Image (cartoon, rainbow, N blue to C red; front, side, top):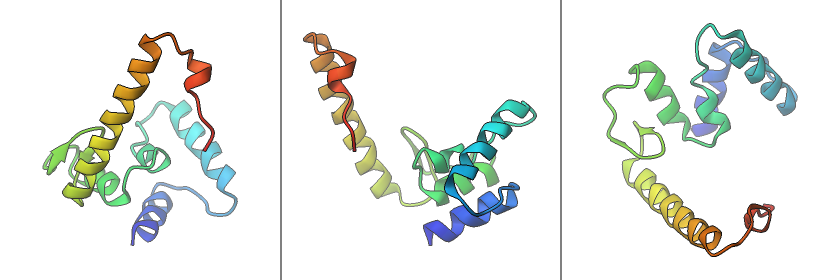
Length: 109
């Protein structure tokens, strides 16, 4: 379901489908246009499509909870993700405070 919601949202926003790199180019153009902030950027950041759509449709109101983003879909799953993000941030901040460089903290996926 998530992918079809994401595809529908991008299509409604004028993105043309094809090569994934093209999406990034189109997003960069939307950011440069400075007409309206492209809230679909949440899809590129890995936010759940239902939450991105909910944010846009509800004009940032009426959300279930808020963490790194506003949640309109699966609240329990989002809260677990927020907890994982907090833990990761704590670990990285502690390592940085102990002198570990940003370069050493950067990992490839």
